[in-house]
Length: 175
Image (cartoon, rainbow, N blue to C red; front, side, top):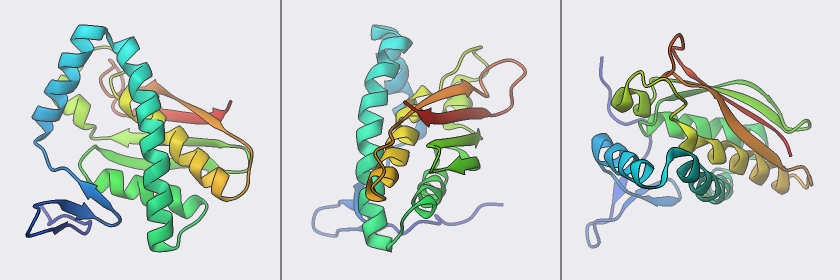
């Protein structure tokens, strides 16, 4: 069964800019994005690329959560839940929160139907490292907005691209 997009999409008739909620968006084919990802990985290596993406993703998630929380009047876990919902609705895969504790600075996110796994297949390694900075950035923005000095780190502990694994797992914990 297929459905229409579950997130609001507006297109400015004068500029062609797509907007969802509070932020401008780009709409590109999955293979285009993943092929660019693979190309960069081939040139600089997955480890170095993961470091770059972590920092960029952290900053982007912080910004997204800040804007979306303000637009929708959200705070705390509700911001993280909204973020996981929107990531899922935008085609990256289906993200579900298995556990979250803001006071402890921890969460565990499961990823099913990863866009990366669909394109890479079973390659025997963790390939969704792009998302790790997103989880720490989201957690840290939520914590900062609540006045907490706690900051986090995130890592991927399992990928659906690894043998014997059907889904990805990401863990966020205090630094």
